[in-house]
Structures are given as structure tokens and as C-alpha cells.
Length: 138
Image 1 (cartoon, rainbow, N blue to C red):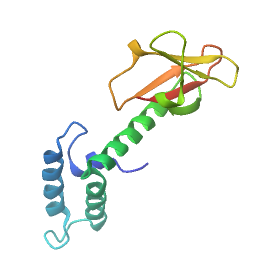
Image 2: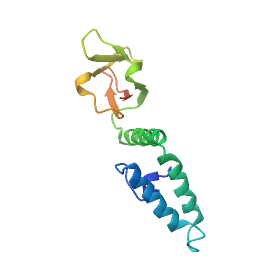
Image 3: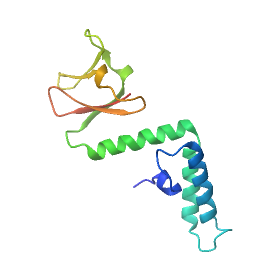
Image 4: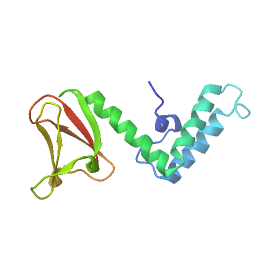
């Protein structure tokens, strides 16, 4: 299982950038081989790896999106994922504020503007004709 960078640093996804930075410095001192002879070198490297991703806004956003996707796939009980898309990959319907995507079964997936979650999140949509689902990045 891949590392959870927030756990490595001892903070959470909701932490501000400043809180992540403070957590990084705290863990760096805790696991630095020159500061703590009993420290695990692997943990020191994990802390540095976590900071490389979480210190930049864009790489942190991508990491968070990947984690959310993995969580969706773990929780998925409704059927296999057919595709991962953005709203730009979908076609606009003749009905206002609605998009659709054609499934391989011949039916469609529909997304209504009113059901869209907040920006930078994932939406799981079931096909109207089969058990396949799509993941839409909003």
C-alpha cells in the first residue's frame, strides 16, 4: 500500500499549507539521523518524500485527487469503473444544465448540474442500462 503522506507528516488533508510545513519540520527533526541516533532512516526518507509532494499546491492537489479516486474504487460496490472523465469529456444534452456520456452497452450516463459536488471532487455515476459506472472529475 502506498504511503499516506499526511500520516507520515502527522497532519491531515484539511491542514493548511503552513500547518503541513510545521509538521514537516517537526518530523524532520524527529527522524533526522544526526539528531536522533535511534531514528529509522526509512522514516526520514518518507518524511522528505511526503514534503516533496505536499509542499507544492499543484502536486498536493493531484495527490489529493488520486487518494480520493483510490478511496472511491475501494468503496465501490455498484460495479466496475468503465471510464474516468472530466465534464469536458461529456456531451451537453439538449436539456439545459445536463451532460451525458455514452456507455458501451448503448445506454447513457447522465449528470445534472444540480447534482454536481463542489469543485475538485469526484462524482460516481451509474449507467442507466447496465452495472458499469463512470468517475467524473468536477
